Length: 309
Image 1 (cartoon, rainbow, N blue to C red):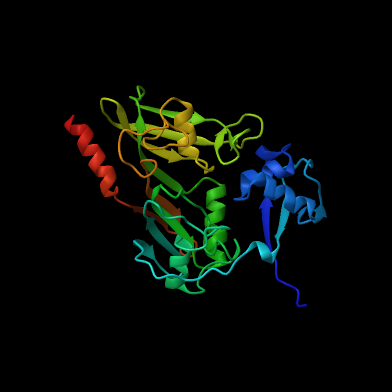
Image 2: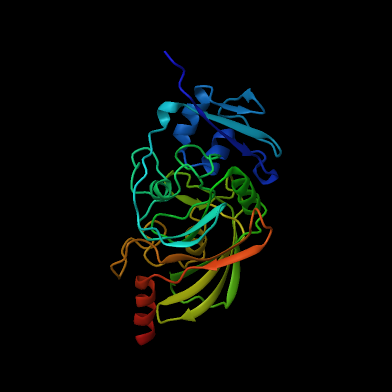
């Protein structure tokens, strides 16, 4: 039988992650659950500096972690015609204003209707391959029910450049959100590590023991009777970062049923969070570029409702 191809992903260990178990490190670094990561480790698909390790191995800063993902874990991803809101496009990058309800990339059990399916139809094979067949071109993500700008890379040179800027925290990412309650301070910073919730592995939480450093800067744009309109600037980019951080200081994002109240007073589809501004140094020209996506209609409607109260 012909050997089936495997995807290999690599992860560089930062000093801040030194001392973490390898399964915790990989769970924090990729989309897989901890149980799936442990299965990959047990089957010999995870190595550190080319040496196979066990799940209790503790990583050190500067190490390189290699993960081989068997072909059977992947699936054939098909292009789908979609009416994508293109903010900017050239031969290296494409910026998309993602709508609410759209998943960024396919995953087992969710292989169609994603942004990647639409990008494959539009761009063909002109997407970077660094993140494998499920994530062509994808260098960062926003949640399914978060709207706003994403940058997608068309080649590996662009991908490496944008990934490096993300790692060095030089990419400008500003979000707009409506949070519950009245935020008293005009501005503030939440500097609290984020990792998997110790009980509910589908959630993230402020986790001092196994979390990675996460920093969110926020400022008040407008106050209402029961809510506050804010802007958040990401210094780091952890999963659900703004949602977890704002909930941790008593101001969960309106509509967030995972980290906020179980019931929402309005008919919303998830959290009122919008990736409004993205700025980066172009990987080919070296020019700084910044783009903005307007607030979606439902978000504007809420602000008008609150202003009228």
